[in-house]
Amino acid sequence: MFRISQYMQEIVRPSALMPARTPTGPVVIWNLIRRCNLACKHCYSISADYDFPGELSTTEILQVMEDLRSYGVPVLILSGGEPLLHPDILVISETAKAMGFYVGLSTNGTLINEQNIKALAKIKYNYVGISIDGIKETHDHFRRKQGAFDASMRAIHLCREHGIKVGLRFTITKDNAHELPRVLDLMESESIDKFYLSHLNYAGRGNRNRKDDATHRITRAALDLLFDRCWNDLRRGIHHEYVTGNNDADGVYFLHWVQRNFPEKAGHIQAKLEQWGGNSSGVNVANIDNLGNVHPDTFWWHYNVGNVRDRSFSRIWKDTSDPIMAGLKQKPRNISGRCGKCQYFNICGGNTRVRALQLTGDAWAEDPACYLRDREIGLYHQDMGEDVYSTVA
View 1: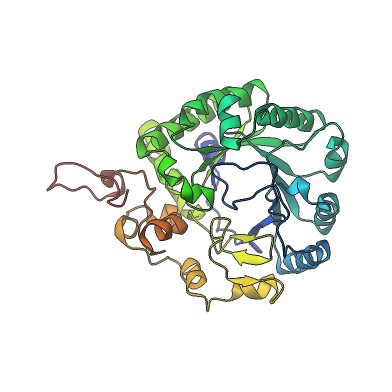
View 2 (view 1 turned 180 degrees about the vertical axis):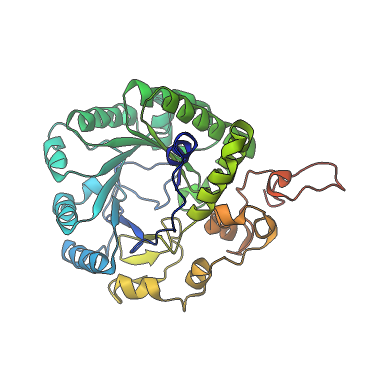
């Protein structure tokens, strides 16, 4: 995850470069249930509205949570499917909070209503993220359900009225990129705390629909807009949190924005970005699915590194006998192509490995979704007289 607002603040109020903090454990995104009342085009878990067999029981979930806490996991993001369809979501959430986790809820929002909002507010979730793919018709088309937009907006209003920090999550594709300005306007008009732009990742229905991935030019325009919005909010004293996910090249693209606009701050920002280090799948980000399978992150559902019914999460996560986990934990990672030659490798860390695997069969090939031009990463082809994007894209 790239925190735009955090690095914008470094332009205004630079902080000292301290030794990098090592998290006590990974952030765990947990798909508690695969059932969902929607069938979204870009769903990585390919959820549907029926009960999937073999899911972890509530007792098993609570036992795994104890192991996660003892291992030092600081954050649990409860997801699905639609997590609010889990019959014991309140018990699980209450227990997670009592254990001291930072607890987030990742939901489509359509099931948050006047009947359950007080119970949800009582949990005191640290954050509730609600997916919005565009305004009304666009959102309903992506979610494949008429009225989904209105239901999600009602959920946002209810969360705000009951003091729950709520944010919008927007997955950008060629089919909804034109809606981004309107969604950002919605964020401002509704006084929503946070905006998260997710680049399309090639997993689940997102893999089936990867032909809809935003082109590099559209991606760059989206980032330009986010940078401008964030900077303007900062200058006006308005606090909105802007973050992006699933494309760590965003950090390098931001550095170029700083070099153009605040060249005197570029060295400081580059040092901060290198300390961040980009992609942390398999290191500081983990996923547990509804069956108890552990994955390097939520987009690796086709690849299991263990199951919490067979071994504790702590043992699974430390085990580097698996070649993927060994490669992800290697520092620096051994990545070929443009990524391996990029002069900003220390910022992005080679970006998202699952996209390379899906398109090339090689998890350590260059990321095909890097939208930076060759000259922007120190690979200008003088013999061609021009700069190019990845040869895979």
